Length: 586
Image (spheres, rainbow, N blue to C red):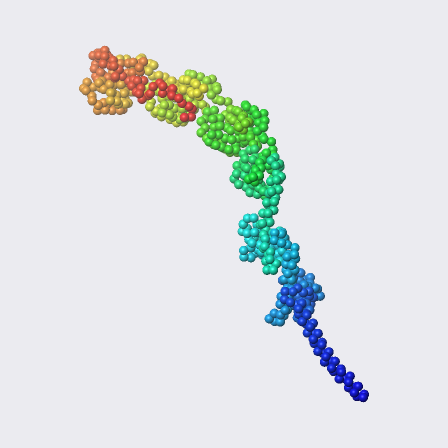
């Protein structure tokens, strides 16, 4: 009985042990199965750091094996200690080596995607940092990686994206698909949208006459564009200064902050015209009081044109010196002959036109007009000296003083010679003595005579030569009708072809040559007409047989006499030529 009792429990114990063992195995299988369920790939699990290594950290998530989070996913590896908790995403329960693959970054991105899907929609604004450049655009870190197309980086084309990388900006979400982890953002749309809003607000509140602050955005040849924080306004070059502006860059520079006045607003065309000079008083107001006619003013030459020079009297006020007002005496063809840009000058105000903003100035009125007193300095009949400055076909100009010229007409160059051109008697720069014949200050003319400064040899020719007198001379010119014989300087006689020989002479050159010395007899004298008639054949007749009456009869027509005032009258020209209009400096 006791044996049976003793054995009974033992048998029962064996039965219970096997049953218990089977139950435990079932329970472990159930627990393991349940544990595997929470370690699904893609799930986020909290783990504990077991070890910190150079290449990352070893993490225990309660799975049969540990996983490693690489160092590049850990921003502060040096501050991580064993035992710290970390949240990771299970990428794979086993890799080829049977190791657990986990990622801290992907866990963060999944959490961020969950947050983004909950908090944001397409069209919302989100902040992010541009991380890197990829094909077609850039990657932006907004908690997850978003794609920024290159065309959406800024409002204009960007050739160098380097300065943008690493910087934080605001972006507009233009496409969002959490299931496919696809997020596309745009910075350009956000900028343009905000710009349109600022522009709308600016056009609604801006008024003509307002003073606004802005920044110079761009400079062109015709002006500058000013960013008014909403839209650009045009500041035209003519509205920058009251004075002359050669180029807008002389006044402004890109990036400069300026205060401008709103001149005009066109809300339909969305245009704003600005002014800078309008902030200061117009200098042409009361200009007549500051620059009365007749007053002397000083200024700086700022521009030269062929017809005159513009002189800046003050900022915004200029006067014009016309070429005709630059000299009393010189003929000025171009203003640059007298002045240069930058010259400081003194002038006299001739007229002021406030409406047309014109001031006429004179340079020459700062000095005395030399022609005002020319009659006192050069009375008629006075002997004067001067330098031969220029020739014309009808005379020579002689400089008597700076700016005052006199003219010697060809008919007043010699008492005896027929002068075709003044260069036959005079040379340029030659100093001459002449007599003042006429003075006309109004027309700025002084007529001079060269021959009048010398004794007229014909005044006493009657006392030196008589009809019948034999004379000797030199042939100086030949003509078809005879030969001119120089009897003394300034006095010539004419041997007519009929008086050369008793035989008929067809060609004067066959009998006489220039320079030949001949002897002749005076057959006629006319001091009024300045003529002396000579005869070579009469010189062959003895004195007692010479009959002056016979030769005088043949000379009545005057064809065999010298006529310095008439023989070449057609060459010398009429008296009208002598008074031909002329001006000093021609």
